Image (cartoon, rainbow, N blue to C red):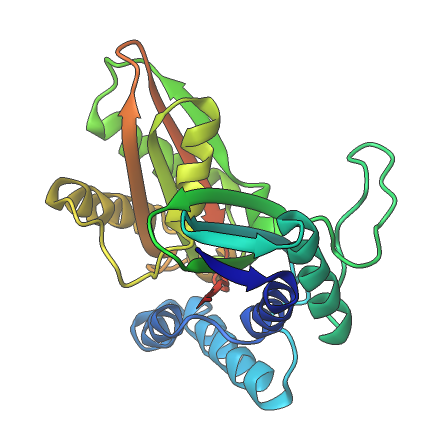
Length: 279
């Protein structure tokens, strides 16, 4: 049994919160920069160039890429042979607290959804924990801005729904969102499971590297089909029109009930941020 001190987890979470907010994953940044060269619309092209300059400025000045530094989503894969010294949720939230205050990141979390009083330190985080084989702890921090999160959708299709209906649902979600989620977007699509697992699949898909396709050739082809359909909507960069509405579509699937076919679309903006560390 391997032991990990809670203070080590706190330090890593704090570091990841700051880094994730200042620099995009390399694969996603490459797609943004490539898009600046391929977008030809009279407004969309210059918008993509501005987005690239914004990435440069954030890196050079050590400031967040976006003013909405998000609600901290934590994906934790805990090895079954790991013992954590301390309360796991408490040490993770302490890391978020330290990262957001030390990094001078905007704190956007309210303590109660209806009474709306800001907690002042961006806690609590949304923590998803899975037990996995091994003696390691893998932590992914994904600061999620709500301009894009608010545009996400979930639909309980019947099993009679075909592939084309699902592709149309994904494209329509983006079309109706327009410029609100700061396109070009990244989409995480969850298919299967039940109501709540489907949404979690979409979130995990959104946190996958933008350059990594689903290992199942069928779903990899479906990702490509969805990406094409979304870009055909013409929403374009920041909603001003153009050929580049989405940078990537990632699908995660799971077995489901014979009577159901849940599909969730988690919308991410052009700065879909996440950072991972393994302890």
